Image 1 (cartoon, rainbow, N blue to C red):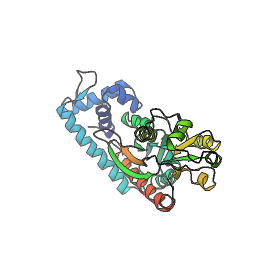
Image 2: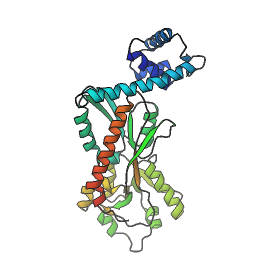
Image 3: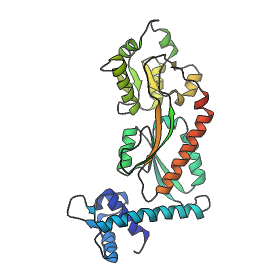
Image 4: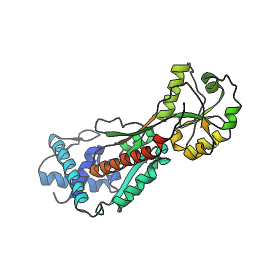
Length: 310
């Protein structure tokens, strides 16, 4: 085997299930990928892929090589981390998917730590819903997700990072104008709920809770991104915002929005790091650990010292 590039090519063909997909991922041509695999098979004297189906599959020997290649990539990254000066030998682009709530809490301290420890790493950050970030993780368009649910994949590695309250919030003038005997059912029937898009896990949980507890078949959901738009619309009295108050401390402190008392049980928003193993698994684990540190530091200084009444 002449170089690590050939082994990495084999890994991505095996992982992505095809020469074309590997060529797109590695930013090269399909003939170049085919030539590298043919060279590798010739050097080893075995067939690594069964090409008789549309999605090529590994042979028995190919599966063995894949297992060893994962170990080799892991050891290589650990070696670079161990011998380099503060991670300076680790280079390239790391693609991170993030739920928006985390952008407004501890993402900035996390990015500062990454910049300090891995100065040669470039970051490509995607802020989106958990559903969309999961899709990008499965297509290997992202390396690591910091999202509201673990990735549903047998090889995925997930770790819970934190959990924050999810509340109904309104402008003070909006709340003052409500009838004194207003019930949850009346409020959720009469006014639009301004929150994350319907594909968001928190919105799905809100809809399910209103169905189970209040018997409401259809909430009037105004699904919107980003959070700043939700805040602006709620401040003008257009409806009831549903989001995590931990992401808007200044808005609450200024009295621009306040918690709307409700007996509707709303699940906390839990956030996880989640990723699929690969050649840069060590870096994924390292940044996952930094994310956990950032979440714990934020909780210690902010989230745990702030009350968000029901």
